[in-house]
Length: 365
Image (tube, rainbow, N blue to C red; front, side, top):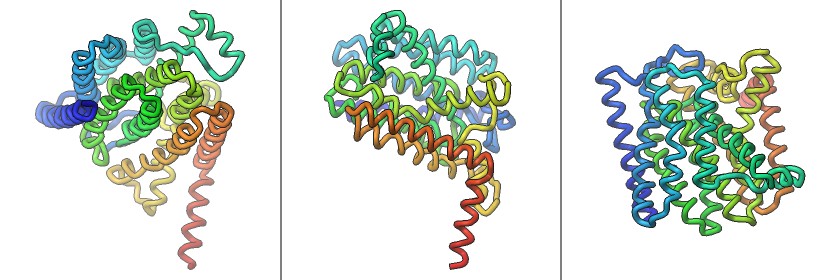
């Protein structure tokens, strides 16, 4: 049954994306202008892929609810709706401030906490574990975590297939752990979410026929955050640091962006810029690999696999050592070190120089 409903979700998402692409081309609506600050695509593209994901995921959740009479499926959908609908409205109207959307992400988080009891009860650190035993602190901490990851996927949504491909990798890791512990509820949610994203991914990568938009990025981030918290809460032997390591790429990208904008650039931390790791890869590394030919049509999709590989560096140890908190913490710090070293190397052009030396060495041979 899980496979059948998952396939239905995939099929529905694929068809809806195709319909939205055709409708947007015909009436010129719901398009993402390619002249924005962060935009690195060369034409106007519909940015309502999130609507296809929401509809197809909703159908799957409702089917599971009707089959098992489990209100948790409906509770998850209800908790995801506020931030997803606000994101979709922003995709269409472009009138909502980042602060307002952040506020709504906290509201969605609180709804999930109270309807699904998706709150953090363990952190793997004794001093924090003592604090989260107090319900109010646990709720606050959980709301920040859910809202943070919800927005983190939007932060990395800058290239064809980057956020959706990354999300499918992250969901695979969480899904494997849910499968390992026979947690059918979480496995069913992850299967539906992965299928809905894959239906979108088919049209988004590599040619970028349709974009996630804020609505799509928000619902993906929200589901990732809630399922990660529930995975630890429902399965006591899994270390809290397993999902932390799974999510560390989008999470640290967000934290580092806030630090960089606020303390390095003295700017508003929620205002978009072009200094994310994926942006630097796109502008400084990929052109070199393509012999200096800066072509948006080829460089955009060519960048995403590099970030998928980086993301996989955290996924493998997270799954292998899901019970070993100390090892997971060490791997988390190792990933942060790799990220910062890579970022600094690219920003200082050292990475490009390294590639140039390698290329020159190969040419001499």
